[in-house]
Length: 189
Image 1 (cartoon, helix red, strand yellow):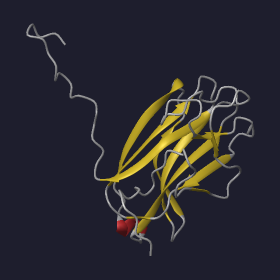
Image 2 (cartoon, helix red, strand yellow; image 1 turned 135 degrees about the horizontal axis):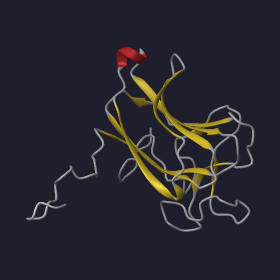
Image 3 (cartoon, one colour; image 1 turned 135 degrees about the vertical axis):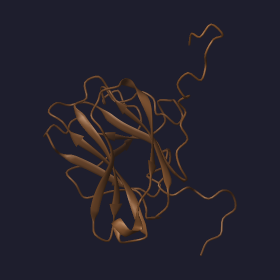
Image 4 (cartoon, helix red, strand yellow; image 1 turned 60 degrees about the horizontal axis):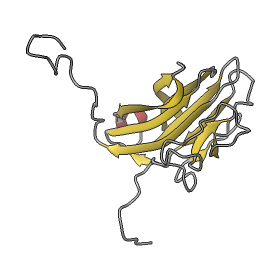
C-alpha cells in the first residue's frame, strides 16, 4: 500500500504528457502511438490539445496503416459501474477516411458496447466530445467496466488523434445554451 499526498488521479483519464497513464494498447492490428509533432508525420496535429505546443503529446493513428478495416484499440483501467462523464478531444484532418469508436467493455464476458462513433471530417483542429455513460450491472453481469477507444482505418490514409481523455463521476454538463435563452427586447436572437 502506498499513500501519497495531493489529489488522486482520475481513473480512465490521461493527457499523455508523461506516458499512457493507466491505459494500455490491446492486441489488435496495430497500436495507438503516443507522439508529439514531427515534420515527418505529415497531416498529424502540429500541437497537442493539453499544452497547445509542438512539444506536447497525444495518441495518433499511424497514417501509414493503409489496409481498410484495420483497428487500433486502447483500453482504460477497470472502473466500478457508476454514471460517468467520458470526455475527450479528437482530431480528424481533412484527408482522413477513418472511424473513431468509443466502447464500454465488460472484461468478464469480453463484450463491447458501442457508446459513440464518428467518421466525419472536422478539419485540422481539436474537437471536444462528452458522453454520459450509464453502465447497467445487470446487463454487463459485473460491477466493473473499461472504456475502449478504437481507430478503424478507412479506404485512404489520413490522420486521427485523441488527447485529454477524462472520466469523472456524474453526468456530463451541457455547454450549449438552451434555444432562445438569449433574446433581444425586439424578439430577435
